Image (cartoon, rainbow, N blue to C red; front, side):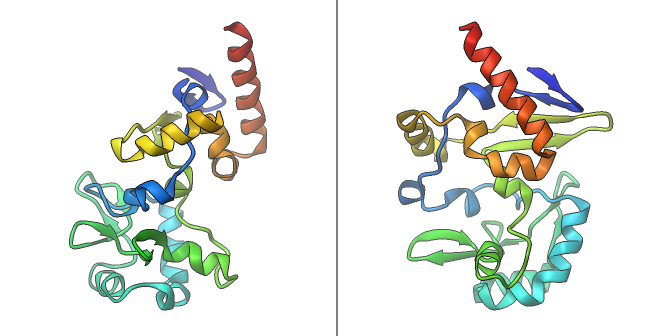
Length: 190
């Protein structure tokens, strides 16, 4: 672990390799698990605002879940999250064949909304936990992503490079530039 500004960062994001392999996992992270995608308070407001524009991209089951539960929910641990369909799929999930995709991201890709998706989804496999004085930035190892780890290793892409755009979105370009310096220093020490 090392400190970078007001973040405590796990060295795993520098040392572990990762590249999503949708052809192997089919977007399992959007349909497996026991909770929706973590959201910030600001993101809950964005979801409320963009839902009418995103709704045409969603499945009937997702629309039903959102209209029953809301565009976001408070999870069992009191965190803000996306709602789920029958405690499984994220309500915003759509499918291309058997591959799960994000309906919000599809609306974004078509220029309908200007918000890509929740930053927690964009950052995955990095999870950020906010505390009062700092944020913890950790690599979330999940066995459904074994193929992504294998592909990342083959391509030699560390986690932090795979999620570069999302890290800049979350923490800013200056923070990311500092992270790259730490990664380079760590590499030179070995």
